[in-house]
Image (cartoon, rainbow, N blue to C red; front, top):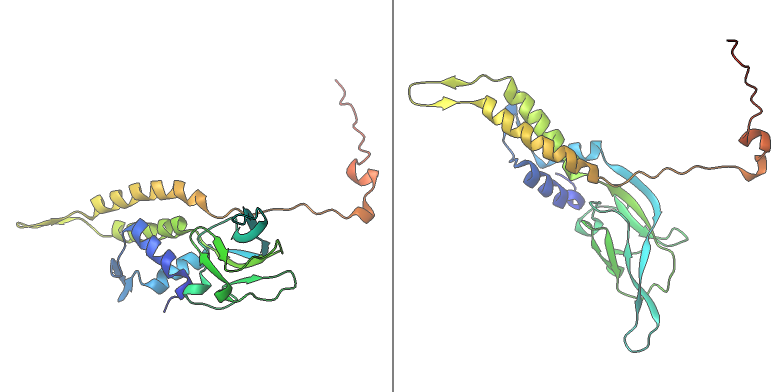
Length: 215
């Protein structure tokens, strides 16, 4: 059975691809089950480890005091532990690494938005979990579907005809749109790290010498 935390993403992949649970059969195996779609999603997921979340500053009613209830992960389509899962799939922790219970907040996994039930007073909160791209998974699904259909011939009888080539064209047109949408995946962050204790002018600007090429 597929994980409960990504059930909503599997549903979105089905909607995007228009795929049921028995669209094709290969060696007696029917496609596409929830587990099979989960495997597509997992093959391209992104890991976020202790990502610092960002507060939305609010003012208390009447008092004008800054309060902290709402936070954002900075990305959506993540594993939803409140729908079922474990702390390896998704967790929110404090600065000391202690896991905050799911009863202390409500979570919108599509948007990556968290609403804490109590004022967090500006304390740092971190997110650890998996990010997914349903558009890429839908593209992968349609690719395998169209390739299977492409190996099957069109045929016609006196009373009916089956044109699988037309279905292949339709699926591949759908793939073109999904290929553009697949760019909506969570961003991969790259950081440049430098050691201040070994910073030297010779490292930053090597004393290269260029020899003039004779004319």
